[in-house]
Amino acid sequence: MTRPLHIRSLLVLLWRADPRLVVLTGALALTLGLLPNAIVLATGAFVEAVPASVAGGLDSPAGRQAVLALILVAAGFAASGCLMALARLATELLNTRYVLAVADTVGRASLAPRGIADLEDADVAGDIGGLSDFERSGLHMQTALSLRMVVSRRTSGLGAAAILVTLAWWAPLVLAAGWYVANAGSSRWMERGFTVARAEGGGRLRRADYVRGLAVAAPAAKEIRVFGLAGWVVEQYTRTWLDAMAAVWGARRSNLRQLAFGVAGVMISHGAVFGLLAWQTSQGRVSIGALAVYGMAILGTAELGFLGDPQWRVGRAAALAQQVLDLEARLAPAGGERTGRPTGSSGAGPHPAEPPPSTDSPRPAEVSLEGVSFTYRGRDTPTLHGLDLRIPPGQALAVVGENGAGKTTLIKLICGLYEPPAGRVRLDGRDLRAADLSEIRRRVGVIFQDFVRYELPLRENVGFGRLPLLGDDAELEGALRDAGGGELLQGLPAGWDTMLARGYDGGVDLSGGQWRKVALARALAAVHGGAGLLILDEPTANLDVRAEVELFDRFLALTRGITTILVTHRLSSVRHADRIVVLAGGRVVEDGSHEELMTLGGRYARMFSLQAERFAPSADPSADGATHA
Image (cartoon, rainbow, N blue to C red):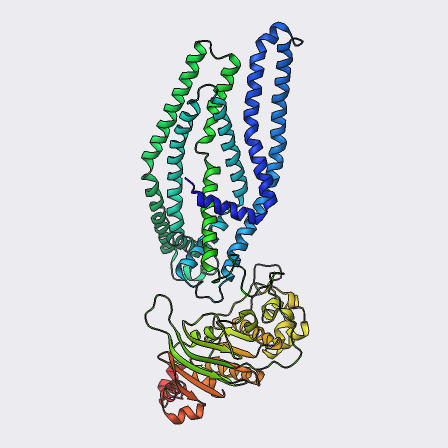
């Protein structure tokens, strides 16, 4: 049975979607539910008057009653048709707004956290994935229509029960009890299966969907054929899907006894009331018109039972609504509204309000970390522990260290994507924990190793570095040219408006090197818009050493006078940085220029020498030949 809390959540989202349409749809639903019983009463009056009207003619009182009753029946059916058309239009409009409200709530909830730690939580990721799967199923597109049908049919059933009170006070109670038992069993059977399916949706069903995608989607087609994985994919999909559905089927089998009790309850209750009606009719206590009314009313109480697909869809939509509001509450900023609105957003448009780009040279940022510690959820060992670091304005800093040393974690803390449980991170002297991050982040440009390749035009892919520059072709072209991608613009069929993705009309897919230039241009656009700190977090991991050195040198030349942070595991790429810090054990263990650290002969010098040996010419000709074979 659909829980009241879930229904309330569904009504909350519908009210957010459009309050006026909710009121209109509700009024139409109640009216459409009452009309069938009004038609039943008019039909009873017509049947009652027919025998006397046949004897007395249409001019007799009975004849006029029959004509009036027939007119009322016809008017009832006509009104039902007109109101049904209006209700269909209203529910279509409400459905559209409801779908938007759900997507908007989930989107705003996902954007609400100041950082990304909550979004990386496995439970949150599973909930968002499950909601996305449900949205893709299209079932929520019928929510308003299904709810309208349920309300109308329940209203009709209650009206039929009210009519039966005049037959015997206990008749509607017996029928309602029978339908309640049947409805409870059916609803538990349905909800038990859906609850298990929802739980499986975050695990095995999603895995089955992913494996199926491997079989039908283009990206994996080559490897599946080359490595002969077709049989494995089919077997994995079948097994995973059957495992997930076995849990659903098992949950539903456990409720079969309740279903049987429900059927028995309906049969017994209907047998009792129909028996009463037959006995009273045989005793002459019920007229022919009343017999017709009571008979149709008894059948009409079926609307108090399980309503099939509409009720099933409402149950799923109500559980979804509860999940959406739970996610919204979970991700809401502490002390803030549960609207999912990102902190610092103006709400006046699709993007937070931003000041226009400054025409002055960007002011270099100052960064400091004081006693910062950070531990990822589910881990016992801290990634950073008591780390202290100050980066003066305008300095080019390189951060190096072994894999897992915390380099990327450090960058995410500086960007305000994580909040340290201990210590402080300051940008331009302001503690990020208390600062308006939308303002702070306008001072930062960054290219991550897994930078986003937006399936959008080139203009957005570059202009996202600073939104107010989206319409400034000169600034965007300057950023792209500085990033080494000047020739890229000339080769695109629609210039700045070329979609950077295949599958769109005129769309183009860029090479890895071209995408890297676009990402660098995006970061440089941030500088053109006023960012005083620019970060490269290993976006060159798949480049060879020479190409990475050239890119880093170009980056340092372009950003001279701007505070820059370079993160890499290749030490030869950062020799020209003003300063190099080495992370190990969650702290800065070495700090200085390349020459100073080499003279120190510590961890940096050892790592640099080991890496240099890999690229030194081999003294053995045969070994050299093997290398180039």
